[in-house]
Length: 460
Ligand SMILES: Cc1ncc(COP(=O)(O)O)c(C=O)c1O
Image 1 (cartoon, rainbow, N blue to C red):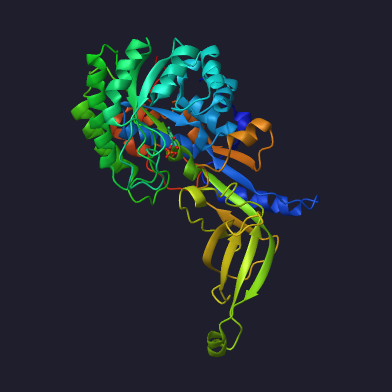
Image 2: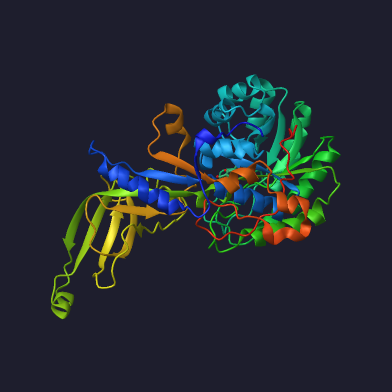
């Protein structure tokens, strides 16, 4: 037991008890609060994160998972992942501070922003974070001066043209520029130890990983020719976090495994890492949010009015959070958040064209449009599932003004599995069917009979 996460960090729930039960209890309590302030909140099932981890190890046993802190830096998530033995991929000083504050050693942190402030490079040097990424000459010069003992990972560009969010426009060296960069690193006495890439998020083509792995092989050869001791391949993130994703995680894992066998076979002496964000946390978080205002807007469509015998209208609902906060995935990931109503509507209730808006006084803060909902009221709760990725920000956490309260929960079974107590699978391969599901209770899960093979060793 690593000691990052303790029973006091979450509500221990028994099997059969669901996130939705917990949510219902909490919304009832919040509605009855006498302060009049009813704030949005999350329920986070840490058991879902544990389950994802076992799923990852099962499909990609050769890959050491690191967690991309920017994705969700809430303390319960970081502690659970540290407890599972993950390393952490940090984009800035604030993220490094956050994970070091919970006790993660510097040897398990990668500073993966290829364009860093000099002060933050110095911070990494001072605090023992030695593995840093780069993709250009200027960065190389900065690191050579400010962090002479750094070990650099060359971040290469990928073909992310099909991905929903593109990173290669901003980050990643072209293959053509890799040799001069590696030569320059050698001249400047900067040690290059590996290659990384990020295929972008929401990529519908798993072959993009295979292509980037093949490209990385070429860069490994170049590096080795120039005398660099190349031994780290970092596959980045972009793995889907929800069940219904266009391309399933298992499909991507299978393409990656084949490409690794071809270009980086077992025993080749290369440590394979990935920096997963959304994969781990998306489905673990459910948001409950309250309607704070509403307005009925009559539509100027006389013909429909005549046809139906009543005025056509659309209902505009206002929420306390919008696309500049918790719902930022609408802007950055083309997400279409769909609310679940806490009170299930009866079949006789008429449905109205409806839209949900955030608090900003501008026309962009639209959370969802084109919904058909029954008549809702101020104070009613809306529930959004799969809200774990890119909703909880590091800035607010550091300032201690986290926007939304998070109630963490985990089933006893998941807690025991987290500590390697899934005994049936450990003792008897044939007893697979006897393994208990790892969830906070409401999902029917795969049985997870995999023992963690990734031990939290340093990668340096
Ligand atoms: C360098 C890097 N690694 C990992 C991630 C995590 O990506 P995802 O949440 O799609 O797994 C990101 C996200 O932008 C990133 O920039």
